[in-house]
Amino acid sequence: MEALKQVIHNESLVLNNSIIKADTFLNHQMNIELFNQMGQEFLNYFKTPIDKIVTCEASGIGLACIVAQYFKCNVVFAKKEPSLLMVEDYYTERVFSYTKQKESLFSIRKDLLAIDERILIIDDFLANGEALKGMISIVEQANAKVIGIGIAIEKGFQDGGKLIRQQGYDLKSLVIIDQIKNNELFFRE
Amino acid sequence: MEALKQVIHNESLVLNNSIIKADTFLNHQMNIELFNQMGQEFLNYFKTPIDKIVTCEASGIGLACIVAQYFKCNVVFAKKEPSLLMVEDYYTERVFSYTKQKESLFSIRKDLLAIDERILIIDDFLANGEALKGMISIVEQANAKVIGIGIAIEKGFQDGGKLIRQQGYDLKSLVIIDQIKNNELFFRE
Image (cartoon, rainbow over all chains, first blue to last red; front, side, top):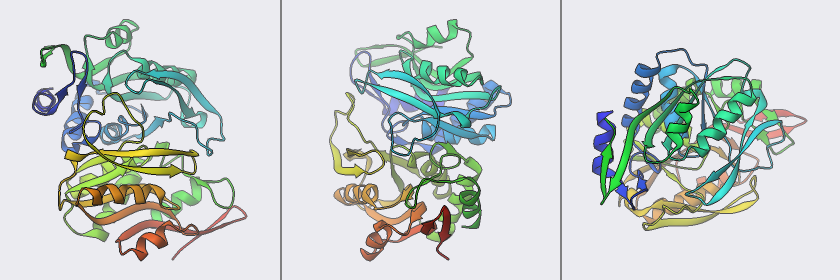
């Protein structure tokens, strides 16, 4: 997706050869016009009815809500930490976050996912795929169907994308960064 | 807002006389069509140019992104926990969450808020106002202007809304619940 590549090129900050920051447009400030373009791209790619979008706290939520408008569906986000209010039955999965250096317990209320429901998973970044594997596990615990996975930016030099595709999931990343070298980004064509 | 009252009436779960849950439409599953109606309501009320919407992790983010489309602006959300990637200068404020029973450090990158920028703060719930006070503090640390505050559901039997209005802020809650008694909700007219 050329528009996203351009924004990444202009605005992202390369911290080292494995970390890029997208704070100004994706996961701290959120560029709503760009999110709409991304929603249109996902619709063009998946072209199939979706019952519900699943994402996780926190930076996937905004993109998921904008994308949901293109599929005319609602969004459920996996919660990452316990709350006094979580008194119902939940599907859960343990997920380790490298950037936060801690484990979270992804949780979705059981009655918010139905058997055979057609689910699109949306997230902002894909690196080693830990968060994505957690969301897939929860959807499949519910016997719902992962129809597709839409990611804004995939770090192609980490293993997550390859592993998920090998398992047969229809994973669409709008941009794949294959290498970061001397502060320069190399995109997959 | 009648449509929101109706959904609260039909779908929310009263845990006790001070806690209601809005998991099926507001802060776990998110009803995107309803969020769009809420965006239109906020636009009808505030009727003024807004440069940026500020919200906080996690459940305010989805609503803020949909509302942003009505004001044609972007969203910045306050982060609640540290990350290895947070290497820039941040405005911060300590905020205690009753439902999570812990203190968070709300943080927004300094370069994402500009002097005199016209800010609309959006959040899903208002109870004692701790999160809201944290966001107001951060916006004012940046010398940006809190033009308005838009809340989906205010618990009118807690003090947050009264305190914020006494300080002169233009606070619009789409629904105010004045009392919960024997599982029945009493809305402010």
